[in-house]
Image (cartoon, rainbow, N blue to C red):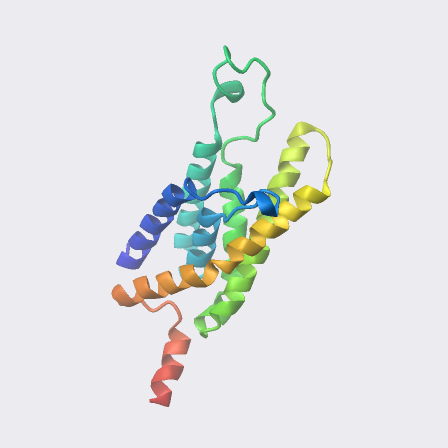
Length: 194
């Protein structure tokens, strides 16, 4: 395991801690920045497929672990109504699907066109939220899609995407410190010009 991979895993773990302190923006339909998903998406385009799958497993496992209260939604003395919840592990599959989406644009990223990855991160977040919402409504047995839900998904995707340049800046810095090339073709072009 290279130093870059190890630091990327630690960055993902740190994003879980910071995510706990990020508030929902009530003025924008309770949207929020999904830092864990953003760090995963930005890291997924900078690493190989095995490392991306490792990150998807770690993110999905921890995301489900923090969202699960236990059997029937918590203590049966307090919560006497069973909660329709999703099975543990569904997030691993959603993170994996987002990771493969980002891996598909990796050739452009390796050419130094990171801004395509930044735009795709917003689209991937929107698809993640839509898939999660569809799975939840399927588990509950009914489908309702309100305008407020659509706006919350759109604003969350947009807010999260706006922070992607900061995450890419951090990943480029980490790669530089670790002497790891995350876009080798862009580095070759720069060397030819000098």
